Amino acid sequence: MIKIKPGILGNLYAYKMYARPTARRLYGEFSYRKKEIPKHHENIQRMLHVLAIHGPQTTWGMAKVELANDTSKIRAREKQYRKFLVGRDDRGRHSLGVLETGLVVIDGKNMLKTPANIYRLSIYGILYCLDVLDLTNKEIDMMAERYRNVIPGIFGRWEYLKKTIGRDVYRLRLLAKGLFLDNIQTTKIAKMPVYEILTYLSTKYLDNFEHIEESDLAEQISCWYYTQLLIPRDSHKKNSVVEYHQWYKLITKGDKDLKEMYQRFLDEVTEFYESRFKIVKKLKRL
DNA sequence: CACCATGGACACCCATGGGG
DNA sequence: CCCCATGGGTGTCCATGGTG
Image (tube, rainbow, N blue to C red; front, side, top):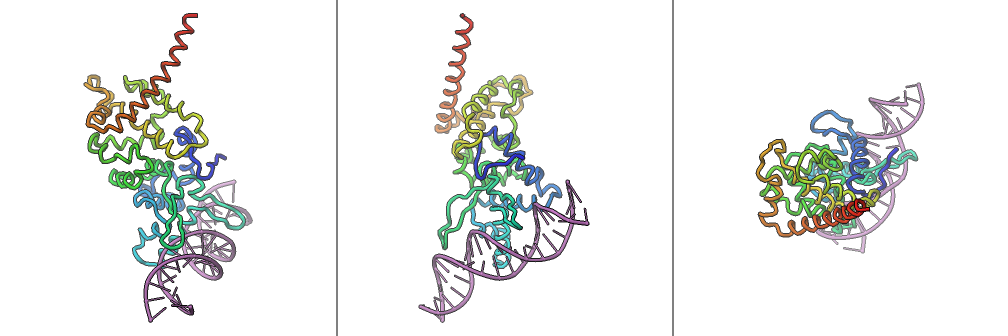
């Protein structure tokens, strides 16, 4: 059986091939808000939802969200949450918690009283929520605000993105569903070499299948995100004036940092293909 | 200071129901 | 039919901060 190493993230390919299927198997592939699902799936999803909407929390804080000020109930719920997080040892047997499957990570300590762990969604957790929880746009906005430090390249400029390209910001859902990643069909969709760029992106992080720093994964996701914006929404329309419409808007509306970031990335892409192309040319002349 | 409420971690117990 | 994961609950221990 495939097992995710405790708390360790991999690259986007690992997410697609490994983390996503595992999370869906363990915690469900449908939202508890849409249909009847196993109780355990629902419990875990509810907890992830609290973390998504309210951001990093102690277990006490998480329980408080739903149970106003009934201390005894909070206490019970908080214990339940901890079980879901750290797993449990019962009858000499250990069952996996969400921390161990990597959807949630410990993000510092609350020093108000005795040190207490603060939990938050990992990037995998964020993607799982986008994939399965059926979040409304409003909820995604809230999550973006809470997790702006985790994926600064996207969530850090969320309001700007929304203002500039509107509902296309929510295309992040596509990534969570594992689309447009290594899919050669992208070649057909756009005249833009989206497939080639994304292939370079996969190559760049190839060695990070089993392990990647969360900040690097955030980088990879950001590059994916701004690349897939090159695919026009109405790709079936033949005469779209500017094919890379949304992308163009972003760059010209004046987020200098974004422009520089993405152009640095395109430099890498160019460098990668030029050096390879040189070899091809050499071979031809043999 | 003693005492208590709060916040947190963890071990253990028991019932139950679905699946092998 | 039995197993075992899960739900629901209890007991213990620890640290801190406020209050009489």
